[in-house]
Amino acid sequence: MAKLNDYLMDKAPKNLCAPAASVLQSADVNKLLDLYIKNIDYVLSEDYPSKDDLLEYGGTSLADHGIYIESQSKLSNRATLVFLGKCHSIVDLSKFTVSNIYVKHNSLLELQVSDNAFVIVDCFDSSCLQVVASGKSRVIINHYGNAEVVYSKDDQATVKVNHKHKNTY
Image 1: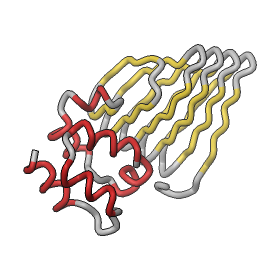
Image 2: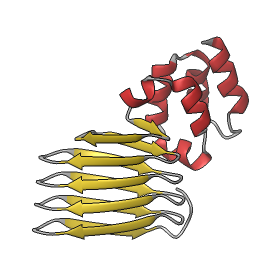
Image 3: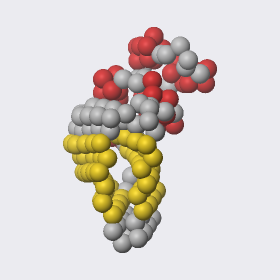
């Protein structure tokens, strides 16, 4: 574990806050992945740790934390999901699910939102998001960079796209 902690500290950006540095120096992989999700805006904007580092050190714990890299998946009703690299994923959100989803690099996400589900999706880089919303679902999409967003809705569903006109947070 010391090897991982030393490696992450060596690659850490200069603007890393003291509490995060403390966790990096002493935590196990699961605590580090919890920190990754907790500080998702920072880690995505800094690309730290990189998707390659996550793959190398995160192992099987990645999926347990909702992080998918260079993979194909079919998921439903998860609170937090992160897609990095070149993923192709199908996600179904239904009932009263509340979710935050992050799509980065060249990932393709097919998102089906129904019933009373609520989701916020942040799309970055050259990712592609395809949304089908139905029922009384609500979808908020934050569009960054060159991401492609396509959606359809019916019933009383709401889809709102916020064009951020910048590459990251």
